[in-house]
Every structure is written in C-alpha cells, then in structure tokens.
Length: 150
Image (tube, rainbow, N blue to C red; front, side, top):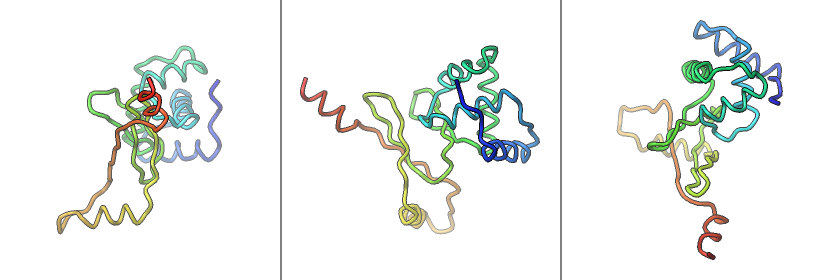
C-alpha cells in the first residue's frame, strides 16, 4: 500500500499544479506518492501497477495524463534511454543518471556544483543552458564480476 503524501509534498504538488491552472485530485496524489515512495525511475506501467494497489479503479490513461501533467508543471522529469520506455524522476536537483545494462535499473548520480559550473563554462559564447542531461550506461561491478565468472 502506498503511503499518503506528507503535508510538505502535498503543498508542493498543489503549488506546482496551481501554477499551470491545474488542481490536486485523488488520482494525482496517488501517482505523485508512487513516484516519491520508491525513487527508482519507474515507467508508466510501473507507476500504474503500484498506484492500483491503493486505487484499483485507476486507469492507465489517467496515469499517463497525471505524469504528463507533472512533467508539464515541473514536478518530475522524463528520463529517456534510446528506444526504451520513458521513465520518471522526481529528483529535480541537478544530477546525472546511470543505467545498469544488466538489470535495466536507473540510478541517480549527484553532480557537485563545481562540475555543473564547469559544464556550463564550455558552452559556446552567448549560450546558456536551462538544463543539463547526462546519462551513463554500463554495468555495476557486481554484475560484471558475475558475468566474467560464468
């Protein structure tokens, strides 16, 4: 069962939705709670399965709509890796992603401010970045060790 949103997270949801003329609904609360409960960059289908534990009548279309609304009002970011399903990330701090090729799991990698500044400094003159998206792909040391020992 998904835990309810904290008061802080509910206020964040309400404020972000209000800026784009949207309102908080029970469905949006559940979907947002799912994203915050387990920060594992779920796909739409993952969110749908988890949210249905708390709201069995929830439709896949509603989950899609909630996630699109959250992306549009800046509550979550989409994480895309080539031809794979879009994943959703509620971590809005500057960070990179690492996709484990063996498991498919996506992990956040914190980027220190000096690295962000260094990356922005290499932009062509007259350009400013609004966001920086960095993705790493590879395998964990554990997965690599297992595959070489077989």
